[in-house]
Length: 138
Image (cartoon, rainbow, N blue to C red; front, top):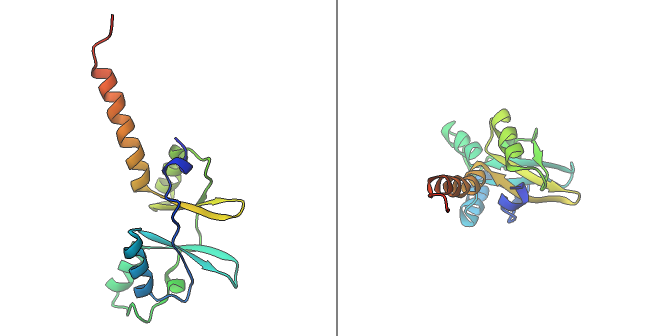
């Protein structure tokens, strides 16, 4: 299975000046765990995750004053839509993160998360186990 089959194509894109509260509100409303942070001045993409917001709150920072740009991960590993889920999972495991921005030639087209990978792999494992347990026809 490919990343394009598992990714969410509803990409929440915010600017670096959004506050963490604004970002959290948008992420919650869209039921996503990350937002792509696009800095049009720097022509740069980054990612803000729920963990970034949680770390800021845990450090006692004010979510109405802290900006997405100050908490954005900018050394991002990007996935291509034609990567396999194994390639995506390997990149996430190697990098220690749970989200990959999916890029094509035009820009971000999706986000794939560990949850997306598990959602796709779990049914396949059940089908394989069921097939192995079924009596052979004959």
